[in-house]
Image 1: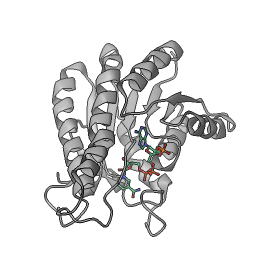
Image 2 (image 1 turned 90 degrees about the horizontal axis):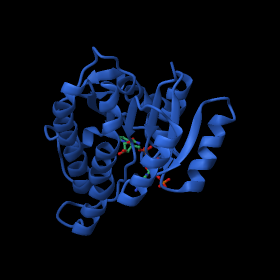
Image 3 (image 1 turned 90 degrees about the vertical axis):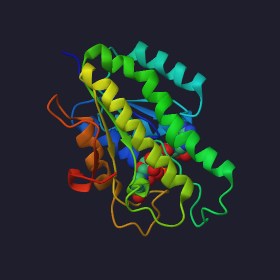
Image 4 (image 1 turned 60 degrees about the horizontal axis):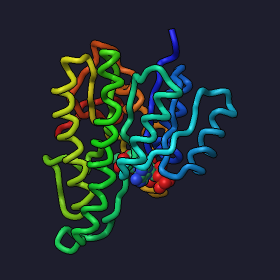
Length: 234
Ligand code: NAP
């Protein structure tokens, strides 16, 4: 039987890169997707150089044409998909209040964090449905929890709350096909987005994401999980 195959978006750096590495270490063939072709090629080469089955795939989640082209190239290269990790994300309204954040900033945030994740899930779900199994992981954040929302980060928080709803709806729709859909919170980790003060490492942040990406048929669906694979409130 051929190796299981995973696709990770926004994987040229940060948590996504680490998710690719850990999945490849577990024996997956991984498509390392990046909006910047060169950055993706360089990142994939670093892992392929260690003998891991990682190949770059240009994919800008905000572009229908890019996602369509990526799907075509993916189909040429792989005969199956077992895990889709919607990791690409932006945080554009740090330090800005909700009363002042430009609506354009909210829009730009949703373009990546919400519509981007949905666009990729809609494009690649048929490959999971065809195999009657597999996992979609939406990389979310506790910043999107309605239960504990506070001031600021209106664009980012709203986008992750919307992403969590996408998780719930797709989980319900894909359940009859044996496909699981979950949201993951990596914890606050040191990446360009998380900043140098974050307590965790990208390696730690990848933990719950990789766990959800590799769930078997008895695994949960429609849930929200954080560090230590612990369930989180919405
Ligand atoms: P990061 O280091 O800033 O990396 C973000 C990745 O997303 C980069 O590869 C970036 O590509 C990519 N990206 C942005 N726009 C894209 C687009 N239009 N198409 C494709 N890729 C795009 O951030 P990170 O900390 O690893 O974050 C990864 C995920 O974890 C995000 O969804 C984030 O919201 C979530 N998260 C992070 C933390 C944390 O503490 N770090 C906490 C909770 C949740 P470029 O290199 O081309 O910009």
